[in-house]
Length: 118
Image (cartoon, rainbow, N blue to C red; front, top):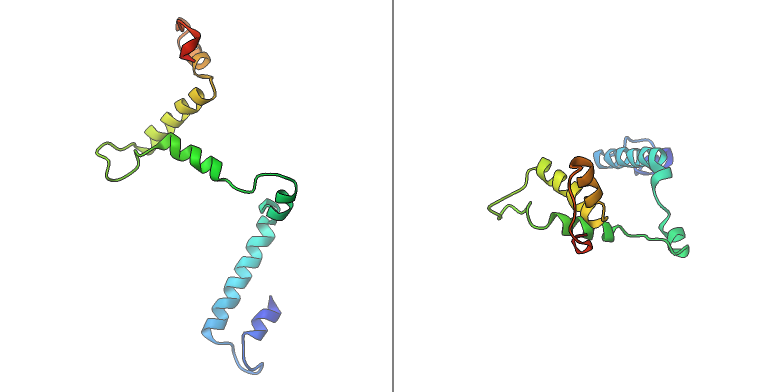
């Protein structure tokens, strides 16, 4: 990074411009970020070659489906963050076919009349 900051000045005898100093600051911040988080940054080329997912769009789509329109400001009824969190917990139980067992933990007398309700 020091060489990049040195190149930011047109003349090695003069101080770099304000823009060049800002660029150096951003480059140093970026270098620190990469150094600290590099192990968590996926190698998308390697993942692609191994046939692994390289997109989180399937997760985003699921979240959008679960949340629906209730956070839209134009809606008359909106969810609170706490209410949406609780709804997601229930919806996840339903999607994973775990809601019956969860209800039976809470309410031991709870019974389902037919298998169609799962």
